[in-house]
Structure formats: structure tokens, C-alpha cells
Image (cartoon, rainbow, N blue to C red; front, side, top):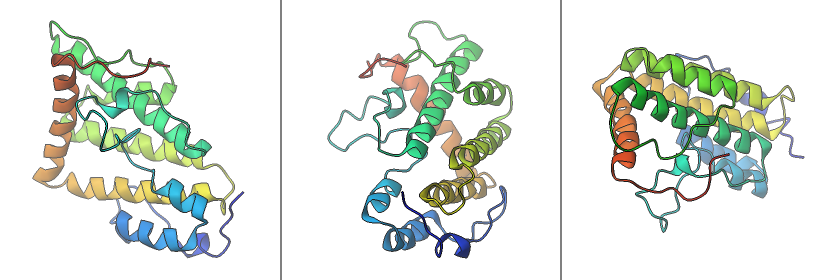
Length: 204
């Protein structure tokens, strides 16, 4: 097990909505010099995308539609499953809300984790900006739950990195870029179904 009794105490406390003390990329560049080789490889796997597609894979298939491949980290696997459930349930409720005919969501939406499902249900009922804030606040809470109470374990470093990404997104929400990012996410969800793309793997 990897513990970081020197690195973790140096990290500034993060609060949702504040300006990030550094960029997520700056933090990752620092972290990989201080983490074990195994943990440095794991942090490079973290993203808000549940399972980023390999460059050689079919990019027309949304990566959130794929079953999560175990990473070797309970934190990362739990996070990916949470985000995957969120996105698939967002797709499900968006289709219902828009009453689109023909085509279906690319994968049946899981009914767990319950918090991810509830977040998707609530977010689609709000304005784009409010919906994104609801989503990111729920992400923040999920990250803290997955982090656990062992403050100096590698999960704290992983959680810190994801929180920095969320703080960067929050800063974008105050600009037109933030709204564009929101629209692109749902455009991608809707287009994936309309093109009839068939995801690899079966839903869990």
C-alpha cells in the first residue's frame, strides 16, 4: 500500500467553487515525480471520462458506454463506475425529456450507484448551467466518499487531482466556453444514438 506522509500535508485544502491553487496538469506533473511508479501510472488513468478510448479504438463509440475494465485501484474503478452510471442516466433522461422518436440510448442505464442516478434525474430538470453545477457537486461528494478516511493513502492524491479538474470546469461555467462544453456533452450523447453506434460490452 502506498502512503505519502510528506506529500499530502503540503496540499492546499480544496473547496468547491474556489479558484484552483494550480492547474490539474501542473499537479499531475508534480505528483508523478513523488508517487511510486505504480501510482504514477494510475493517476495518469484518471479523467472525467469513465474510460477514455485508446487512440486506436473506434472513436465513434462513446467510451462511457463500455463496461469498466479493472484498473488495479478500487478508487479509480469506483470513480469510473460512478461517472459511467451518471452519463448513461443523463442520456436516458434526456431522451425521455425531449421525447425523441427512433433510436435509443446506446446502453441501458444502470440503477446504481444510487447517487449517480439521482444526480442525473435532478440535473436534467434544471437549466444547463445549474445542471452542470449539480453534477459537479455530486461528483465532488462521490470523490470524497471514494477517497475514504485514510488521509495519507494514495487515494487522497487521486481525489485531489480530480477535484482540481472539477474546479477548472467550474471556472469555465462563468464563460461562454462553459456552456459550449455542456452542449457538446449532450450533443455527443444524442448523436451516438442517432447514428446507431453499437457499444462493445454489455451493461452491468
